[in-house]
Structures are given as structure tokens and as C-alpha cells.
Amino acid sequence: MNLRNIYDSRRIWKMVLLAMSLVLVSIFIYFSNSLVKDLAKQERERMQIWADATREMVTSTDADVDFLLSIIQGNHNIPVLLVDDKNNIIEQRNFKLPEPNDTLKMIDEYSAVNKEFLLKKLNKLRKTTNNIEIKIDESTRQMLYYEDSDVLRRLAYYPYIQLAVMLLFIAIAYFALISVKKAEQNRVWVGLSKETAHQLGTPISSLMAWTQMLESLGIDKEIINDMDTDVHRLSVIADRFSKIGSMPDKELTFINEAVESSLNYMRTRIPKHVTLTVHTDGDKNCGVMLCQPLFEWVMENLTKNAVDAMSGEGRIDIVVTSDAQHAHLYIKDTGKGIARKNFKNVFNPGFTTKKRGWGLGLTLVKRIIEEYHDGKIYVKDSEVGKGTTFAIEIPKVK
Image (cartoon, rainbow, N blue to C red; front, side, top):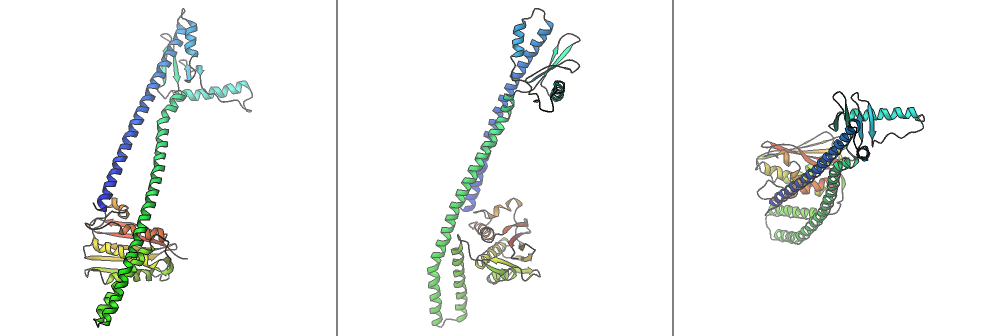
């Protein structure tokens, strides 16, 4: 199984786990809301009994007054407003009335504040379904309005509070896991890079000795020079791998010169049907802090990807500009393009559209630009079948 398949498999598992989580959360909220509805139904039944007791108190001459009073006075948690047919408040229970303060010294003024408070509650309750009509006789009726009890209100919010806590816990656990996983991947990545550099060292030294021996044997010097170029190239690659994992040394470099230098090796090694052109603005003194070997790695990776995307025929335009804060590079090709949904995925380890490939090139490019040069790289624009433009931003030295 290649890295692309592993990446797809992990993404599928993530989607499955997310779907399972959503199902569990939905079930949890459903049962919690069912419990809230049952409690709300019970409170309405209690209010109906309260309303019936109130009617009996008024209309019946032989009613058990003590029993009816015990029902009415037994409500200690549901706020109730009883009003007549002219919307005058007859009775209120369990509302938390405003506390008197220094500005409410007079009893009548405090009563006015209470009345205003209760009228606001009444206007609010009249817009809800929490009301019961009490028919006293054919011409007289009263209305009982009530609020949900504190217990019911807290229970209504409880599942969402639990859900928020659960999501917070999952988020903390996820980010902790990602951090540990990323640290582990970094250790593996760094170890592999340094081991690669170490393993390349011995054969490179041998090849250097062999080229010297071939030169002493009178082999065509042009052939020896080409071999030296490639051996030197291997040495540069080994040096690049050795720099992974530690902050590389950076030097003040003119971005235009850095780009031209980075492409010198590639110009003679890309297919003859691919045109590579560099466009620079007038700011030849745009300086940035670069590790030149790693920056060359970035440019070569992006150029190779562009060549592969065009199947060996097309055009690559590299545009270098700058503003007051950053140097900007745009690498545009006329290749097969990238679907918008994959603009970010292309930088993930293992993601590749090639039949053969590890899917690590752009991951490495992103690491070099963002972690080692405090810059930014992203897909600026792409259209399937027409081409792609990658953008790089690197802080400018003032």
C-alpha cells in the first residue's frame, strides 16, 4: 500500500469516526430533549390542577378549602401569573421580584416597580403557549400564565452544556494527539533525513575518487566534467538532507539572484518542449534571509512538479515581485491543474496524483518555507486542464 492509499484510508476512517460521533451526539440530544418535553408536560398538568383548584375555590360553595389551598400553595417552583378577563393581575407566585434599593424607599414606588416588572412578564408570557383558561362562569373567565421552572430551564440547557464540554474535551484530546503525532513524525523525518545524508556520504566520496582516477587515465575531460557536476549535485543533496531538523544558517540574499541560481541546474535537465521563463520586477535589491541550498530544493521541487504536470510539454513562468513587507514568487505552469478541494491537501504527507511517488515533495517544500524561512506557500490559483500557480511569500529584509 503506497502513501496515497494510506492517506485515503486514514481520511475514510476520520469520516467514519466523525459520522459515528454525530450519530451518538444526535441520540444524546434526542433523549435529553425527550426528557425535557416529558417534564414540561408534567408541569403543564400541575398547572392544570392548579387552575382547577382555583376555579373550585371561586365557584364551589362546599369545596374542601384546606385541600384546595394546599394545592395552590404547594407550588413552590413554577412562576405563575393569574389575570382576569381585563388582563389585571390577580395573583402572582414564585417570581423573583426586584430587590428594593436606596431609590425605592417608598412602598408605593416599590409596588409600582413590581407592577411594571410583572406586566413585562405578562406581555412576554402571552406570546407563549404556557397558558390555561379558567372559566368561572359563562361571562367570567381568568387566564393562568406560567413560566418553566428553574429545573426545567436548566435541564433544557444541560445537554448542550454537556455537548460543549464534550466537544471541548475532544478538541483538547485531538490537538494533544496531533501534537504528539507531529512530534513523532518530526523525529522520524529528521532521523531519516540525517541517516540519508550519512549514507550518501561514503559513495559520494568514492565517486569523487573515481572521477580523479578516470581523469588520470586520460578519459575525455568533458565526460569527467559532467560526472563531476552530477557528483557535486549528489553532495548538495546530501547537504540538504543534513540540514533537516535543525534551524539552518541563513544569509542575506537578493531574491532575484537566488531564483536564477536555483534554476541553473534545472534549465539543462528539463524536456526541450518545456519553456522556463523568469520574470523579475525592477527591485534588484530586494533582500531576504535565505538558506540557499534549501531554497534551491524548493524551486527544483516546484519546477519538477510543474514539468510532471505538463507531461513534458508546456510552459513554466516564474514571476518575482516584492512589496514593502515581502518578496513574492509565483510559479505558474500549463499542466493538468488541481481541483479546488485539494488546494490544501497537496501539502499533506502522502498526497500525490502521480502513479509513482511518495507525496512528500510539497510537504518538504512547505516545511522549508514556513518553518525555516518564516514564509508562506499556497496554491494561488488552479484550473483543471489549464494549469496551476503556486505562490510563495518570504519576509523582506528592511
